[in-house]
Image (cartoon, rainbow, N blue to C red):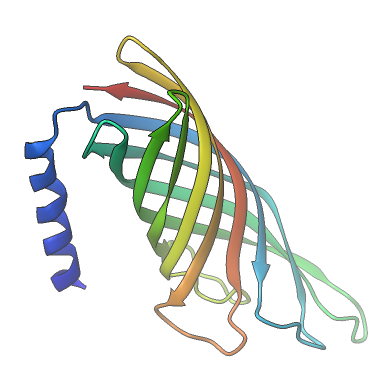
Amino acid sequence: MKKLLLPLFITFFSLSAFSQTQNEVRLYYGFTNSDLLRGEDLDGAASTDIENSYELGFRYLLAVTDNLSLETGLNYWRGDVLITSVPMPEQTTRSEELQTTSIPIFANYNFLDYFFVNGGPVMDFQSSESESVDPQAGIGVGFGLGAQYAFNNFNVYINPNFRRYAVIPFEEKNFHQKLTTFGIQLGVGYKF
């Protein structure tokens, strides 16, 4: 892992020496519709439903060209997982809190002055313990299509996005559940 991160950071920061455009820092809050999905259905397994999920974080965009930036940062996601047992002899429902912290490594491409597309791999870490939810730590993917409006050095944006956690999990389980979210991030940025 350390062998991968060091060259990545060196490349990331050396590109800023060649950049003639502005870098940007962004803060955002996001609403998400989330679910735990498996590759196939399991008969006799408990069902899960996620409520009250949201995300927040910050992003740093390192300009490579006028339209292309490398995007990284820190993302925090939280949701309440409702676990409903099979009815044997009675059905019970309980709630567990699920939290993840993620580091995206995205490409961000601006087009038509007001729009952008972003996406790439994401390093996910689960910051809560769960008895019933498979670990969500691993390498995931994310992508989005957004709109932005810039004034002076500030930028406001909206970024509808898709995230799939633990596509390559650090700890593989049989019939591994994978957190999948569709979200809308609302944010503000500052170019410098």
